[in-house]
Image (tube, rainbow over all chains, first blue to last red; front, side, top):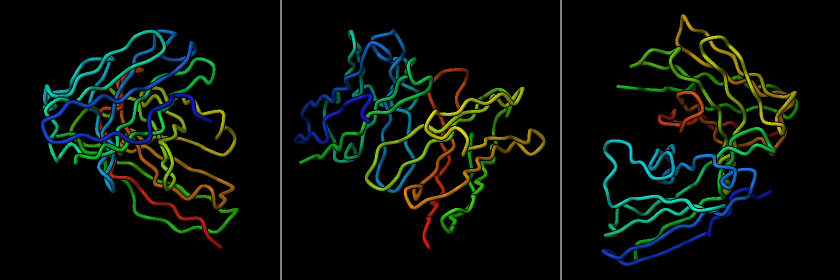
Length: 111
Length: 118
């Protein structure tokens, strides 16, 4: 069952800005647990992109940013580049499941 | 640099068990917990469980409780995930990932494809 809900796909032209939403509930995002975002190029392992709602690991361009409000979070990507084409997953902890949960993933297509 | 290297692909028959290893290098093994996550074809990432590498404490997803066992060998800087009573729906890529405390999964193994087929 879906615990964190993401749109299946988003798209944008090079240079544009896109956002990916992640909708949760009072037992995960709304309970104050951090949201993390991962980027996965098909056929490779996920890579940490944003941690603690809005922090970037070293090496991640500042074109990527995260935010969180209430029971939802968002990932924003500005200045889209062809190399950004990938799947993006949100993650949080869920107290009712006593474990970590992921969103269904969003496929970003750069037109 | 940090590396997590997993064991190779496996093909198993229904009802069998599989054990996947994940060898860490480039950091102090016991400073980070290990999680196991799987991804079935076309499906979301699914958290299976984790192990505290210092004391060996484990916690499993309710979905896999009773079927999964996560262990570690600190002398070999290696974590293991064993899944039993395999069925076709367990066909997936299995990943190990490290995390500091309850933090994000900041490094991942390359993945191990487990195929369950008669």
